[in-house]
Image (cartoon, helix red, strand yellow):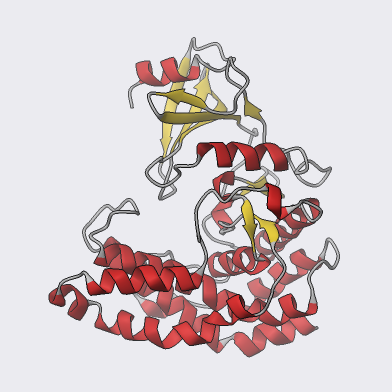
Length: 346
């Protein structure tokens, strides 16, 4: 992406393009993102959607437009999307979809929780997100991705990939394949429990929470996956990225941990906005910290068996490494299930 093209894109928003410069944001597996500087100062965030993944642009528009005004509170920062000339939050350039947001001065994201406050603020922002959207009708929200966290569907995809992959690839992944099949029955309980559907972020990992310069949680970002789901999807994604300091591609499993004090801090933040979960939802929270890393690991394994067609990769075995690391954390979380239950009950 050269400056000339980015200037042309951004000129379709209500922005003066003189003295703009761009810096690629390297985090994220799906979309392409850039910091936009004006006269040397960070001013906006420009994003290009990956339409190989997000094909339902109208669904994303619908869900953001429905939710964005509700996600505005003295304790929750409202994301400011700049509109195009035709008053849309997306600019369509030859089927490339771009959006522009105001940068919050001094704000940043974190890949790891470093202390009690980080974990507490993450819990506080996630529970506030859900409380602000608690009265929303899931029926008027459109799925931006079909069966995104639906484990039975992911099992079907995995089994199809397994049937159509070569024997040498299967042998390379034999331990992951055996573990996957072992976990299917354990985790299918979420889809047989009649849990209430809520409007969820559906990608509530720590680095999708924006922090202020004073280390206070501001809001959830990257809203392409805002749609109906179970609260457990957001809870499990948050836990796996808060209590474990290792990255998703950690090959040394001894570094994959479950930090009890950070879990306790996250729960303190979660309950700081008051109660909003049913008894059944509370009962299944510990297992959701196993479910979400497992689903992500299964998707990475499936993509590896399919020839790496979904996630962006930097080297051939990256999806296999991701899968092994995520499965390793799901095993660690399972060992801490009783601890999580005790904290949640207390």
